[in-house]
Image (tube, rainbow, N blue to C red; front, side, top):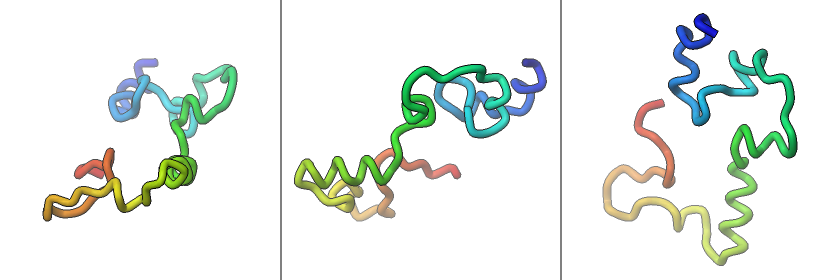
Length: 76
């Protein structure tokens, strides 16, 4: 656990671990859909947005600043 914490990965993810990177070796079982742990996929979100009568670009900032999708981060 100390080595995993020292990797910095738990500080970059919701919940403190991942199932698709270094933390995956510590996960013994996932009950239910792995998307509940990993996060919902962007294609699924895009489909749901469309079903709500919006387009993906409707979610983008319209303030004249650099346009980024909602929820994106300046630090990558």
